[in-house]
Image 1 (cartoon, rainbow, N blue to C red):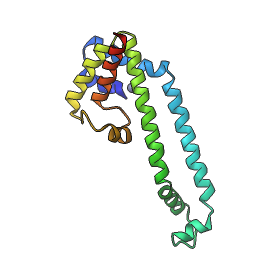
Image 2: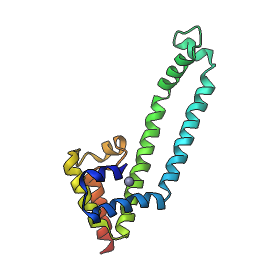
Image 3: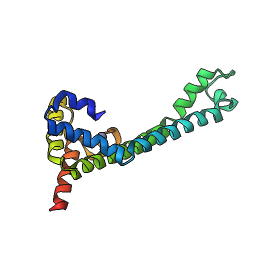
Image 4: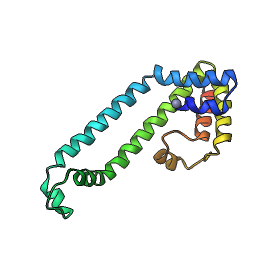
Length: 162
Ligand SMILES: [Zn+2]
């Protein structure tokens, strides 16, 4: 994910190593395994939930159906779980953002904090994405922390070390 972006902007050897260190941080801190498990648990809940309601005549009747077509049942189920999906998405965003900060801290611990910072600046210049969004908005909407929050976290780590 992050590694593919680096090919566009961060061509300096130190910056590329910093990005690889970031990705290794995800591996070392078991983020990949946690994400894999979370996706499988959520998928199981989704299919399990559908299995529970797919034969519910009340559900189909409440939407005006006398028969129970499978595709209609799936569509009704997907619409009924939208509020739950928003909560799950918010939770996943919080976890994902936490993982990104942890991987950045791992990179910094290996001595590539300034290179990572330089690479993030280049990526931000190229992507022109929102630099500093409201923290609550970004916490709810963004899977990855915005540029300013990542730099602030790297700076905060600097202050703690001083
Ligand atoms: Zn990452």
